[in-house]
Image (cartoon, rainbow, N blue to C red; front, side):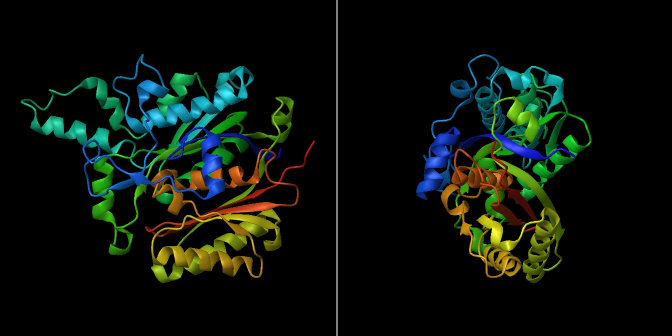
Length: 364
């Protein structure tokens, strides 16, 4: 089978809109978390990794965005920026381009606002029908495809903090199955007062202090031959994705270590080749268990660790996609070098672990 690579990427994050501010912020180790305007964003948190000055009207356009929710606007913006960076060639055959987009619950704000209106208005049906589409989970993926003329397979994936890795794995299978020639894959998450309260009540005591974040990262996956034919140099090869589960939290370290070992074996990569590790870094014990599990699998290897969560906040469903973006940002414009590899990992609080192994592509 043809080698699959990542050849372009786009980010919307707390650093701003675009890959350049993201790369700069990650490279400097600068926090994107700032104080919230409490009048505009009431809720349990006073700090957040909010995309600065972001509105659908500003970044998507005035027409057709009156009822567009925040997560959809973030996703549409990220997808649009990626397509714009690749030129018209990418969508010359739109039916051959797929989109796999990860999300948490879609737009929590839209779901709760619509439900409240149905319960508090004079009649249950006295709601704004134009806002109903925002309440379904695949709204962001569907609108991103419609807005930019993508006509291939369209899939929404939801899997907690590991959503970005699950979307990447699904995109690989979609391509391997012959359903499309190229795939855009990634994840998006919004900040809202409603999401903030759900997170606050769902967290343990050790997680309460971590601010939330929002954003999106989207990647172009295609064969190395197709990338070079279009004038794009492969940034990283997709060597392996792997997932596992644990029943007790004390088993999470071993579950992740086994997961990473299995992925490295499948990828044909030795621990010494791992240049970069981007862990999820969830709060408290999970972060310690994750780093211990990775260290167990890598042994004496000493890679560079990219810890995104302290910089971006808890970006929920977008977390592992933003970790992957941090790997590409750190690798630079030429991507991972031949012989180098990178590892993206995560332990979800709901009992799953996962990782992805990327490798450097041959130059030329």
